[in-house]
Length: 74
Image (cartoon, rainbow, N blue to C red; front, side, top):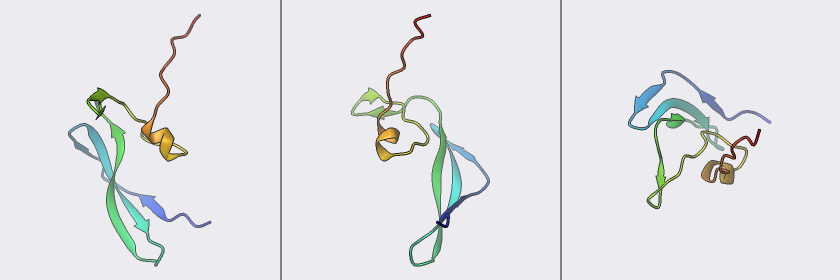
């Protein structure tokens, strides 16, 4: 399967996140550019609560919902 996206430079900082341009090839073959978050900085909020999502995941659910970190019992 052909990859239909490509990340590029520069990486910019906006309040709370680093963003970078990404080229996306649409189904019709047309190429478009858009900004994507490369990394979050600081807290993110959802429904008024702190919610720090992952920058990437294998599923949409992995992006939206993170498992709570468990302290190492050792």
